[in-house]
Length: 113
Length: 233
Image (cartoon, rainbow over all chains, first blue to last red; front, side):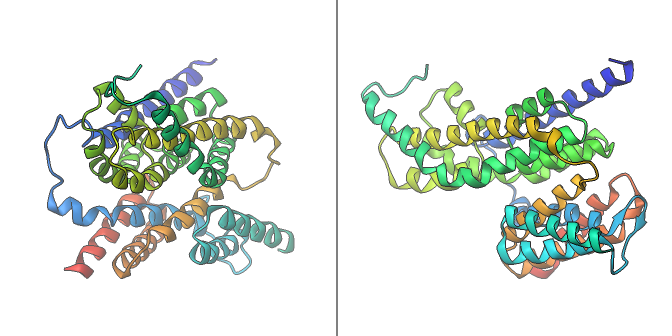
């Protein structure tokens, strides 16, 4: 392995261990009962807003912006696939259905255009 | 291995465990493919099979694993990645608070294992049983459910990592994250407030996508949460 390779492997495991610690602390927060803290009010009310906002912030940009430009032409396969996938996700809330519709649309659109 | 109330017969614990294991089988039909997709995507993006297996074992949380994989491939900073994982997994705190009363008397090791195994479907499928069954061994049902999910998750990851090579070149693997997250997004939108938050986050993130450093994530979430708080005030 090149030195660069070793560095990126180390980086990977550092990140993963960080992820594991964060996630385990969240999971064991109340179970461990070593801290008798209560969830602060502002966190409790706003916590339900975090999943929708984070998921939305991840989902939409890649559908319209790629390789440094906004790709918004009416025949752009990524955009069309994204719109179809959004529709499928809205109606079915199902991961497999969304993937099938999304990639299917991409395949059709990229063959046609 | 686990110290339990000595009066509970082994076969009752065993049957609770297996009931849980069986109860989660229908859900596996959706969970295992998710793990397979994560395995495929990770290897496609340059992560080794051993590494993605390690991540699935150490983290055991699908949405955050997927986000981390794509952020890593994007060269995102560790801060951004861990903040994303925190945001995506903060709901585990609620699950933790909800099941804690049912496992109060267990050993620390036992609690740690049960905490590690906590997931959305694991919680959703076992909480009704935990709440209705006051027998001291009812937590074995939880163990059966969550252990089943864990096995499916690890196997799925292995399978996905293994078949990753069969994916044709030019396949737009980078669409996996948006598509999966879109499905998850609509399943968590439950009222006007969450819908407005999500729409705001999506629009702001799209508008700021060219800023770099994954700023669109921070700005999108900030705008979305602000909008949600404003709508609810």
